[in-house]
Amino acid sequence: MNAGRIITIGLVSIFCVGLYLVSLFVPGSLDGALSYMVANGPVAAEQKSVFWYTIWVSAFLLVAVGGVFLYAIFRFRAKPGQDFNVPEQSHGSTMVEVGLIVVSCVLLLFIAIPNINALRFVSEVPQARKGEAIKVIAIGHQWWWEFQYPELGITTANEMHIPVGKPIDIEIRSVDSLHSFWVPQLAGKMDAIPGQHNTMWLQADKADKYYGHCTEYCGDSHANMRFFVMADEAADFDKWVKHETSNAVAPDTVEQINGHRVFMQGCNSCHALTGTDAMGVVGPNLTHFGSRTSLGSAIFPNDTKHLVDWLKDPQGVKPGNKMNLEQVNMVLSNTDINDLVAYLQSLK
Ligand code: CUA
Image (cartoon, rainbow, N blue to C red; front, side):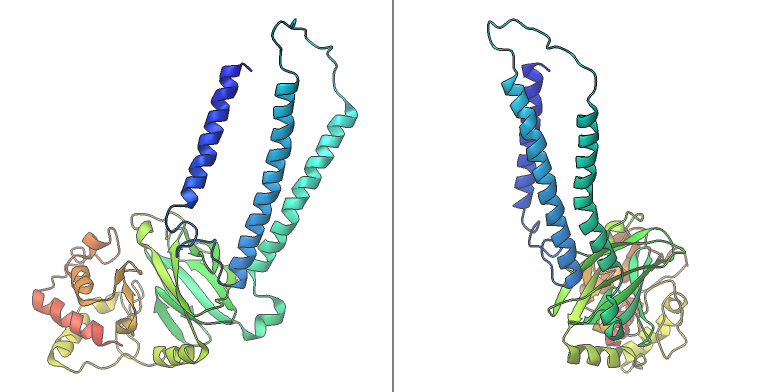
């Protein structure tokens, strides 16, 4: 290898390491809502610890192998005025070859064993804690998440509530393409694969609103397939469960009554409202839509402006989503939209 090539490789390596170091200081990369460097539960903590362990073992290997390499380059370089002699050539050394294979295998075991242990830990609620676990089925749809709590009789969307300090036993499914469930500060990623039920678990150690994101490319609105995990104190979670298991409230004002009528003329074929004739399963269950903080799969705040925008042009605000009013010949007048908003917001 000539000097020019060595210098080029050196410069490219320094550039790459520099780029990586700079990326660490981009706001949010280490402490942001989507950073797995902030672990707020045992599963995330285990993943973070095995990540750092693997990094340190790899760094040791890089320094050890790179160090010997650099030493050899400088120690045995051709010095000025020195005759260039090819050293005496030999073929093979059983001891060196077997030794290198053994050392490589041992080093791989050093990385493999903690990683396999971590994989086993994160894929299932620990045996001793199974009794207190709450079961949630997380189902990926293009492009939103459905959350079912089979033991509690709850079906909701895009905002998954859990009690702080309790293990949550999650089964991951998909109804269409591949998706992947990831809440960086709590756990993941786990793929959602049609026809397959994958498992994982998570636990939040402090009450907070955690960001989640689909992390497997799944089509037009993959980037818009977000969700929240709301970790509540025990009493708040119990209150939420009680509330979620109640039926949709009946419309009250003139606007709400008209909104309900419009809903039952089309929206009901895709959306369900528990306790009414609306039993659609294509879109999110809207029984308690008014009490959610976000809409459109956690991409907008759940306020009047965004709800109006959504109803006026769902394809414009979330390209490709299944709510295509033109396709189903649904024309909503401004009055319809106004009344639908009043009705949906009343569904607390
Ligand atoms: Cu679902 Cu990407």
